[in-house]
Structure formats: C-alpha cells, structure tokens
Length: 299
Length: 260
Image (cartoon, rainbow over all chains, first blue to last red):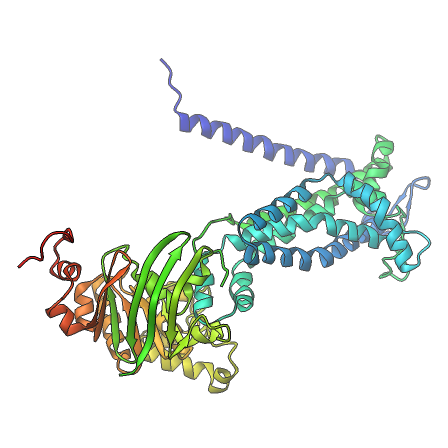
C-alpha cells in the first residue's frame, strides 16, 4: 500500500504553490515587456522623458505620469510617516491592554477598507476642503491625491511599525529604564533604533501600496497629462501612472502603440512596486509580534 | 552603619497575588547584603522593588512603605529616573544593546550633561577597568558587544550600570547563567565593589552568599524569615526554615517541634 509521507506531501504542495506564484509573476513581467516593446522601440528614451501624451498623433511621453506618481507618493509619505510612526509609538509603548487592542483593531480595519471607498470620501470631502482652504478653482489636485493616499497608507505604516516595536524584547526596554532613562528617552533611544528595520520595511510596503493605488487617486487627481508649472506646484491637476491606466486601460486595449504605451506604464509600475514590496519584506525579515512580561510599561 | 533602605509592612502584588507579604526590613548603608531563599520565594521581586523596577509590570502594586535614605521612594516629589541612577540594577541575564562595547558602557550616560564634560572615553575606561574587562576589550571597543562571552557580557552589564554612578548596586542572581570560572570573576568583582558602595545581591547559591555577604536576608514563601549579620545567621539560624535551608534539608512542617 502506498503511504505518502505527510511532510513530503506538504513540501510538494508548498513547492507547487511557490512555483505557480513565481511563474505568474514572471509571466506578468514577460507579458508587459513584450507588449511595451513597440512603444520602447518607437519612442526610445523619450517614452520616459517626453512630456506629451497625444494619442491622435501617436506620441507617448510618460513624464507627467511618472512625476505624478512620485509626487503623490512623496506627499503621502510626508503625511503618513510621522503620523504612522507616532501612532505606532502610542499603541505599542503607551496604550495597554484593551485600549491598545481596540485602537490596533480599528487601524487594521482602516487598512482593509477598499480604495474606492476612500476615493468617494476624497471626492466628497477632500476635494472641496482643499479647494476652499487654498482658494483654488478646482480641488482635484496632486496635493489632494497625496493627502488621500497619506490617509490610506497610514494604517499600513502604523500597524506594521507597531508590530516591529512590539517584537522588540521587553528586556531591552527594562534595561533602558533601569539605567535611569525616562519613558520618552527609552522610546527614542531603545525602541525606535531597535525596531528601525521593521519600521523601514513598513514604510516601504506603505509606499508600494501608495504607488499602486488606482481608483482613489483617479477620482481626485484631476487627470491632466501635464507637468505643473512651476514644477513644485502640487496644487494643480495632474496624472499618475495608475490613474492613467485606470482611465485609458480599457479603451486602449488592442489599439497598437497606445496600448503598448499603457503596457509600458504598467511595466514601470510593476517593477517599482515589486522592488519596493520585495525590499520591504526582506528588511522586515522575521519581524513578528511577541509578548513579554516586561513589555507593558506603566512606570 | 546607618540604614539605607527601610521597608515597613511592605507587601508586593502582581494582580491579586501577594509575592511579598508585610515585610519589615532594614538594609544597611555600605557592604554586601545577600537575599537568599528557595526558588519562587520572592527574592527578585523584593530586590526590584528597591528601585521601583517592578512598576514597569502593568499589574504590579504595593502596600506599605519603602524608604531610601529616609525618603519614601513612592513620594510624589521623587524623580524616578534619579532614584534608578542612584540605585542601579543588574539583571540575571546580561541584556546588551545592539551596538559596540563602548556604546553599551556609555548607554546610560549619553544624555547626562555632567558626564559628557567628564568624557565618555574616560568613564568607559574607568568602569571597564573596575569590572576587570579593560584588558580583554580595550583594543576592540568599537566591536559589537554581541560577540562577547556570557561572562564578559555580564561584566559589561555591571560596567554599564556603574558608569551611571550609582551609590547602590542591586544584583539579581548575576552568576546564575555563568560557568564556574566566570562566576568566580563576578564574585571577586562584587566583593571588590562592596568595599566602596552598597551592594544588595540576590542569590540561590549558598556558598556564594557565605563568601560575599556581610548581611543576609532569608526569604521563604514571600515572608522575611530572618535578617541580620551573615556570620550569625549562617552559624546560628534562629528560624526553622532558615536552618533547614542552610543545612540543605527540605523545609519542615512548622507545626512539628523544633529538631534538637
């Protein structure tokens, strides 16, 4: 009678899953590469440096979209980084017991809300608020998209940073306190440096989410394929790679060079997000929450 | 000698469980006081209460008073960080920070302005010499502390505590995880330090207590059974539990008559 060893069976299932995942990722990469080859051949480097995207003239310059993506991501980071790490410090180092659990659960819930819901809130509240606050004609701006993305990635950065801080052994905190450091000094000098890897990983994963977010950005960015003047003026409409793909993806399917240009945008986004996610996960390494007797600091 | 710590009807609790029950105790200024007793007696909890380190555990609370230098350590005006700088504590297992040996020694003083004036390198050298580690590490102060042996790591932990400049040093079973040779090195160091400062050490090794202690506190099941001069307690223990513990026999039923 044939008895399949359980470990071996599990190994085969896991190995097959891994191979399928890798094959899928490679297939997507190969597909995007193959589809974008025509535009790369036609436009060359100007596909990246060109500022004009004119479908009727078959001119495809992606710089406004690349700029838009980088700008909204940077703005999101400026907003979410201090708030996310600050909130993580509060949940990990200050709140205890049930309060901590409730706040952490709420943040995890916020992280799970679909982008389109954030987008609707963005349209309803953010665009009008930004317009009125800064006296603009139109509230659909790069700034609005960055602000919305910042709110969206805040829970991700917060919960993963919280995990990183919680994974630090309680003995290290106790050691800081016993040497006469205050609670605040222990956070600054023991907790934050000790969990910097996990926090960096959390930020990179947050950034990759920001770069890949489509619907909410599309709803509030204004969708204008143009670099702002001056270049740092984020209070103007713009376009990100994702919002461009969201708007033109379906209609551009099979339309020669336009489709190829969209695939090229997809390729750039795919490589960037994959690299960020991969680096984020590598840096985070084995960061997992641990419980420690000395962790619940109150004194 | 004057008294340094005075505990009056001090009970220490984790949640509703009393770990130390209505302790009355005086610890003298200067010399070495050993807290001995069987496992789970509450020795470490008592030690950690002397610089309020138990307060870091969420469900800890206390009753009664703990006086240090004639001042209640729970006095609202008392700065907790100041107390912990004066009353240092070294844990059972050396817990080193990521970073170099030098970084570890000066970890507790980097934010203290007066120490900066004196110079961190000077303080590091002085404290590493005091714990007998200087000759072994002086040419690799910038190497990661994580590479040190367990015995060296424990001496580094003591050096780090000394760098802060405490007047009293609490040691919580500092040799329990060390091999015989490293343990002897720490014992010699503790004896040396005991000449210039107050040392309160928890140990479950009777031989160590005999070798080090000027005074002994014997704890059993959360109660202070006996406290006093080491020579007296080791030669003529008055309490039956103390006597059984010192003689190595299991504790007797207290209802039975005292063995002759």
